[in-house]
Length: 516
Image 1 (cartoon, rainbow, N blue to C red):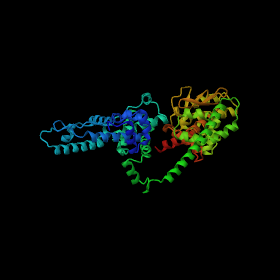
Image 2 (image 1 turned 135 degrees about the vertical axis):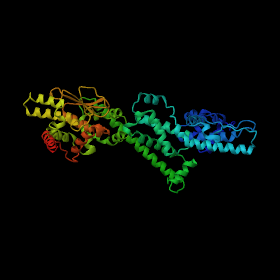
Image 3 (image 1 turned 120 degrees about the vertical axis):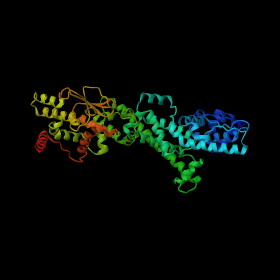
Image 4 (image 1 turned 30 degrees about the horizontal axis):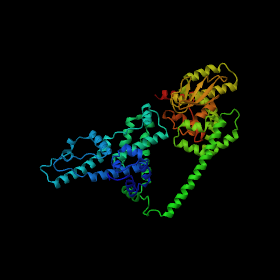
């Protein structure tokens, strides 16, 4: 192989079912000598697909092992790594165990003077088998994370929550690194998946989102291996497992007619996808232009938002960054469109339900035992002395009810409303200024520490807060679950919660005192 020309290397690639790489090898003028000199980094730059990288490195490694053979009997029998992958494995294995702890089986060389060639060959072969077996058992215990690209390292250093594309890049590098550890195998064990994900989360704990990060990263890593294995048709281990688990269901490979039919279907699907993508782009461009206009065509806005609902829900479901979604669909920052989106998803008028909740439960909430001495309630009582108008008093009570909800249920108020302070949480939260002054009061909905929308009354503000969790697919914080559960049960007519009034609480305390 060392004397092969570029054309001979390309012919060899075709024989090994790597014909897709011929053009790239011709472009880079990879001869036989250059092929044997390739290292891992060169292969990654030369070959795009991870599966092809693994197969090519495995072929080069096998050729080197066959051509290298054993050294002469007069010198120590040293088994040296033939690729950078082996060198990395040996280096990482040394961190977890030492040769002395494994006795004579781990000795790196044998004196030749007291052994004949046959015995030496048997011992060397046995040593190689033991080394591979030990690597297979031990590599996960000493697993070291790969060297991530610069942009990934910057994101990890800043401890920023990775977006969808950044997650894919991290998973791709972990999968490629695991394949090297496994010497080209694409079937890690469950324990190996666990150890790799544990190493990632131990090095970067902020990636463990609400304690569910382990399962999400593990699922993504397993899906990546499936994606890499799917197109491989020439690897014995992959084909054996596909047949074993029913991927082909005992059938032979597809005929040329079937393959041609599948290709036609794929072309049709791609053409439909292109048409759909162009149509969606046209809607997005129109919505972006309409958003900056002073006078807006709300009927046309409603129509286009309805037509793009499906693609928008898919983007939100796949955790597309919020800034990207709001850039494409800026009308989601309008309370009216947020309520409309909520109604399309749940068939519920959230504004109407929220007004009913605040009107119906304000007396029970304001007289509940847990908020009687609350500063907001005290300020309300002082402010109510200055007014006699029924509508004004009703508005002030509804506003106080909105602000005091988390205190009634024992939740964290800072995750629900912020009074004259800077927002510090990423989940939806209300910022309130001058709550009991109807002329200058201001409610703002914040999401990911950025102001999403500004409203003038408590009903719209509370409805927008609840709608934001549903519209943007945000998980409810545990320290706010009781409050949101109360609101949602009434909004969706699941049940009718009740609150003990102050008099009922006093009766309960009096009864307990008598019993004791």
